[in-house]
Image (cartoon, rainbow, N blue to C red; front, side):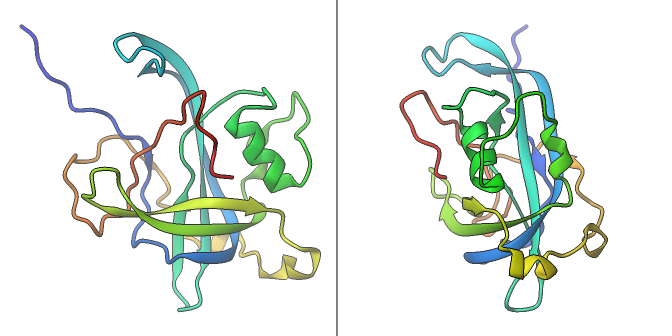
Amino acid sequence: MAQLKKPETNGFRLGPIAPAGAYIATCLDIQDQFGVERPKFENPSEMEKLDVTRFLFGFRAKDGNIYKVQTYEFRISGNPKSNLYKFLTAWLGNPPQYGWDYCELKGRGATITVRNQESRDGSRTYASIIGIAPVLEQLQDQVLPLSMFATDTEAVQEVPDSQPKSASQPSAPKWGKDEECPF
């Protein structure tokens, strides 16, 4: 018997939607997944196994509240044209070294730009990171330590398809070969 399966949405528990703006943030966690099955971009009827990652950041906004925001899902690739490589280069201020474990970035500061946007179907609003850069040396003291953030960064394995517009769990857009990463 054929049964429909609920699509999986992977990501972090975020809490309230982060306000738009530029912030000094702390990398709270990095989620790697290996051998994830996804439809191929070129032919959605075919499946492929991918290794993917995403980053979770936390910051204190101007209103004094602490917020969390996550990146889109990146394919794990060291190709200089890959979105992960571009993201790490922008964050570090120079290209990452091959063989280096980017999970060492947990706890490191970054200057992020957050935008609030609607999902493609218009059913919800979420915060997304549209820019990242190193923290200026004179602002390093504004990077919050990991201990300032709640430890509920475990991954969310299933998220209902119909969430209210104020839900903060983004869907993970897939950038195709011809689409550019937003940073």
